[in-house]
Length: 578
Image 1 (tube, rainbow, N blue to C red):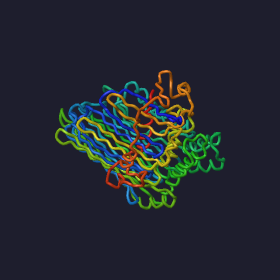
Image 2: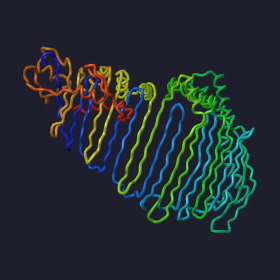
Image 3: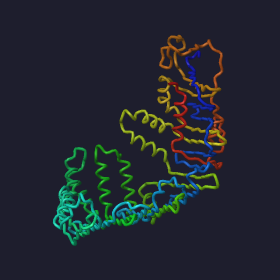
Image 4: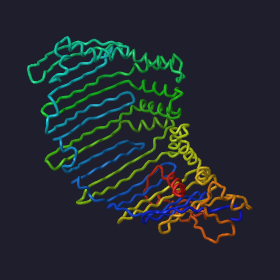
């Protein structure tokens, strides 16, 4: 153009019958894309996505042909977290055909729970696997580890057939004791402690096809806990990366020693093709050790965690302690193989919390806002079809800002991630307002529409400019015509007013094959982005001052943390010519 502005036109061949319109306008801060394509999928689906700086929400549904491997299916997932409660539930009831990998088993089942507080962890459960064929020789194993005032005591029981290759380790009481000492004493010695092995009962029989062993023993560990704590302290003191005084490290070491293993038990019983497992674990007083670990991480130069994240984790743990928060997950599941053609699976998982309101208040007292979230999903088979519907919501003040800060922290200073880092930095400075995306799949046609609004899209100037020869991009528009998609990139100040064609060809955006039309040599209309239509779609303020009803206010659903970045990056990257 006469003033040195220019339009860069890139032609790209398309395969298939898809169409696309997209645009990005730096002045209005709007990004919009509308695309259609054909699919061979038999699925019909619809989903909508909406995001703001404070969160995202959405829902969708689909209907598809039922896979041959599934004869019946019902799945429900529900979770909710807000200031009042934090709960979650999952239930599954399904029947599969004989092609299932479970068809080699008669049944599999498990049940149990995990309970976590600020200073304790406990879990107890069991499981059974029953096979039509014996999985091995009958045997039984039991282990019981408990902490005492002097250290730890491990009680062990083993009975059943043993491999002939191991018979020399168990064929006498003395050999058995030496074998156990080699197992346990070496572990204690390597960690600065000691172990004493005592055999309580012993019986060995080699009259059968395989030798059998029935033994009970206990192992007393002493000095192990102190030695481990001292070893950690010495390692921290000698590290050049840790900026803590010796006194501070000694104090942290004492905190680590406060952790107590109340008990750890494990049992295994295998008989006639059925194997039964059980466990029971309880660890107490680990809160001081957890805070000590965070203190070390916060004072380690090479730590990948920044100070802000560590401080938040400390406050969260302190809030859990003050509120006496307790979180529990319970589960039960069973898979059976009632016939040669079917396998049924049922499962339930439940999550619940106690003192949640007090916990939320303790977080607020420490200037931490938890936010709210919810997830629902229902899937069921109905005749020859499978249907699904679901929704998701996540709301938290300045959530997107926290996400971008976390992303930048994870990128670090590596050159390999510099491109992604620059894009995220630009996004953070762009004053993002909203984004939306809608997907519709029906009768073999996929329709995608999306958009985003920024109040300071000039923050992307360098990112966009780098894509087009370090130019100043004003807008990008793409249109599909038959089998060609043409991208029009309007750049300002490409050259001076009196530049020659040779001057233009010497730029990074051109080469020997580029067709160049100087000012006065062309008569052509170029498409422009319909910013009013984009603003209406997004429900944002238009240039004329009118404000359309937002997607969320009109009941339109949505979700997608990355929509805004995808919308902008997609408009830019799809437009590039390789």
